[in-house]
Every structure is written in C-alpha cells, then in structure tokens.
Image 1 (cartoon, each protein chain N blue to C red):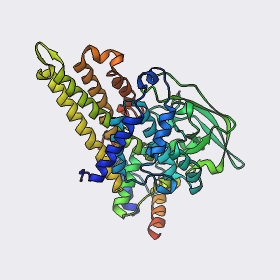
Image 2 (image 1 turned 90 degrees about the vertical axis):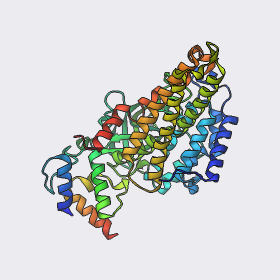
Image 3 (image 1 turned 180 degrees about the vertical axis):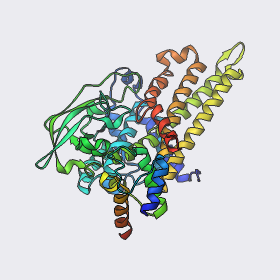
Image 4 (image 1 turned 30 degrees about the vertical axis):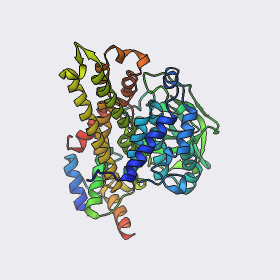
Length: 75
Length: 382
C-alpha cells in the first residue's frame, strides 16, 4: 500500500518522495492534487474517504495515509 | 447515463414552474431597480419547500433525489422573472445548507439546518477583501482557541445574503503555520457579541440578492459551533463548492429556456424589410446558438447530478458545469439583446436584465479562470 501510494504521488508531482515526507504542510501537494490522490485511494482500495476525514493528520504523509486507511479498512 | 425523466418528475418540474410564475413575479423591475430583497416571496418559497428539496425529511426537507431536485429548480427558474431570488435560494442551499448537512453534528443540524430549510437566511463567508478572492486559502480571519470556544477576528467581503442573514458559516485559520490545512469552519449568528455586517452593496446585476460584508471583532464562538474538525475547513469548502458550482445555475437554465422562447416568438413577429426578422440568418443563427447553449448547459447540469446521485467523483464536472453555464448565459443574454435591437437595451422591456444578472456568474463560486485552472490541473497540466 505504502509503495503504491508513494509511486502514484511521485508520478503525479514528478518528484520522488518518501513515505515520511510531509506533503501538505510543505506545499508539495496542493488541494487539487490531494483530491486526485484520494480518488486514487478510493478506487484502488475500494474504500470511501468521507470529506470530514480529509485533514492534515490523515493525509500529510504517505505513512499517515496508510495508517488512516488501515483503520478505515478494519471498520 | 440516463437523462430521461419520469412523468412524476416532469410534473414536479411543472409544479415548481407554475408556483414561481404565480407567486414571484410581482413588481420585479421595481424591486430590482431599488436593491430590494423580496422577503415575502422568500417566505413563500420556504413554505413551498424549495429550500429543502434535496435535504433529508428529518430536517424538514423534501427528501428528493438530487436529479429530481435540480430538475425542479430548473422549472422554478423558468417560472421566475427575477433571477436574484432563485440565485439567493440556490446560494444558500448549495453552500451553507450543504455544508451543515455534510459536516454538522446532529445538534447543529437540528439547531441550524432545520430553520434554514424553513426560511431562516444563511450566508457562507470565505472571501476577504485583501487576499482571499481567487487565492481563497490566503484568508486572514483568525480563530484563537480559548476556554470553551474560539475568539474570531476578521472580515468577510462580497458575501451573498450577508446584510440580511441570521446565521453564517465562516472560515478562519486556527493554525496559520499549516496554511490551507489550518483552516476551520464555524457557524456564527447575529446574537453573538462582536458580530456585525455592512449594508447592501450596490452591484450591476442580481440586485434583489443582497450582498455585503461580515465583521467579526473578538467574537466568541462556542466549541459546539465549530463545523467539522479543526483543520477540516479546506475539505468542507471544497465539498460545498462542488455542490455550488454544479447546481447554482440550475434555475438559470430555466431562464435560458424562457429566453429562447421569447427570442423565437419575437423573431416570428417582428418585421423588417417586409419579412419576419427570423428569416434572416443572422437572427436564426443566434437562436440556434441559444438552443445549443441551452441543451449543452442541461447536459452539464444533469451529468453532475448523475455522478452525485451515484456517489462518484465530480470535481471536474462541477468546474466544467459552472464555467460553461455561466458563460453560456452571458452569451445568450447578449444574443437576445441583439435580436430585440433597441428594445433589448431599454430597461422597461426587461430584456437587458439577464445580461446584467449573468455577469456576476463569471466571478462568484470561483471565476471562469479558476475553473479553467482546475480543469487543466485535473487533466495533467503541471
């Protein structure tokens, strides 16, 4: 999961990133790109990300996305 | 995608149109000239259920699915001679109410969504005077955490319904270090100390829709009035804007239908050089273009509603709908003026009003330029 999301984002922003890299607070990803990332996550992992959960705690790094998704998939 | 309508849906559309025609068209020109908000008509619309059509029945809504709702709003716009009142209703529904419905707690929905659906006037404030226009997230309004709530300071400008609203959803930064990810939404109301607003600001069109500023000065907002989580303001705004951009022109499409019918009737009646002006290709081509814009606008509107109905992503489609329909209305409003000639520009014939009403559509809910940026970005432009 971490590798897949990392690869997708790296390709989207044309920059190699790591799982711990801060994406939102650093400005590497803007508000439109994060919507594309969420659409990718929803389609790939067949999970719904409610708009209420789209906060920096859940999406600032690939690692935090993965942690959030694991929680969602368990529910 | 299936855009065929059932008999029941078409009856609802017709009913909305007849309601608007019978109840909303008195003294429109005089109200429009004097920036008068049609309070009585607003109340009639609320009583008829307009503000609740797409919202859950438990909050006083009609519980109609989104496709039926936009079709009814289209019919409503066809029957209304005033573009301002449908705009006010749509603005409140697709921003303020949608935000509270999607992000509000049960208590907030009972306390605020229910009254809004019943006719309380609500505003949605993100735009600011200095930085936060197209650079939406550059906003300066602050929300400082304190015991039991937040202290809000700042101003919101060019806000639809601000001069008459009883409540407002406003956006403020709770953590400036996080930029756009530190923005949080709050519900404020006129009873709160430190809340004030401007008088109606005069503008070129949509003059029956009051627009103005909101001022918050050391305004204490209790924790229970925070809408969504801290830092969820961006997501809330994005979500509300998808609805607003997708649907705010539903009623304007009804108006475009009316324009087309008026243009055809006039082109068949008005004589020039011994023949109907419609027999000249310069006129008939304009009418064909108006029809094309109308049908394309409908397709954009219905596609957004279809995607929404099926819980599919619609950010790009909402941007395209907003961009296309707003520009189509301006173009068709210009065409009908050319068809009517001198009558088109003389105020007493009420033809020119549509063009004035349409101009704001190029700006609010994200300018046409912003929509083009979104579409380009979503298609891979870096």
